[in-house]
Length: 261
Image (cartoon, rainbow, N blue to C red):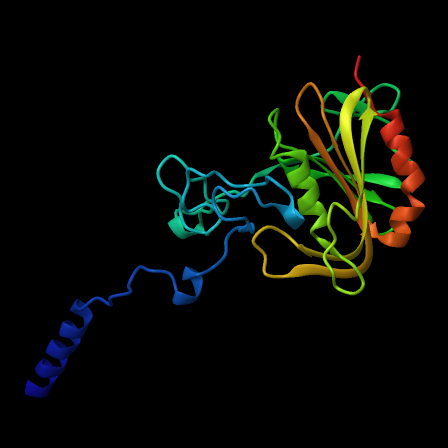
């Protein structure tokens, strides 16, 4: 009888002590990634995709892009619907995917401009507020058109130098504006600067990423064109053979670009 009472007392004491982790989810769930965390540049920088200006995050939020819950007034709803504060991330310039509107004649509307899409080019949705439009050109090239507001993002020369700086010659020497083809022209009645450069391409795959694009025999056709709404930055990049095959279509787009009436 005495032994039974001792056993009951021991069991009762064990049941009265609660585990330190009682009520918490399993440790394996604490680090679960409940949403996508975009790679972004450091707060306040102007460096963007492949050396492009813009696509920066909110400079007033010191935690932007670090996967840390933002301070009051900046945080967003947890996409998983849970109350886990660690699941909240700062959006890196993300907007709902969109494509350009079309006029009745089929021309695409790009801000104050309109233009016809060449055969063999296809539009792709963009989900960055800094990207006005994106197109697949041929089998393996891409045209991205950036827009950073009425004041743009830096001087024309600075942007051209940044683009050219992504290329080097076959012997490894960096390409400069002196060796690239740069022209001052009129496009849609607006001042524009066009660029043609080729060589070995070195560029970040995306802002903040550790991997990089490293491809030989690449080329770029670029343009910075003024508009009543501010400058638009056009970059057509891909294998040199693809860019050369689409050079006439590129010229046709520029020649046909017009301000909407």
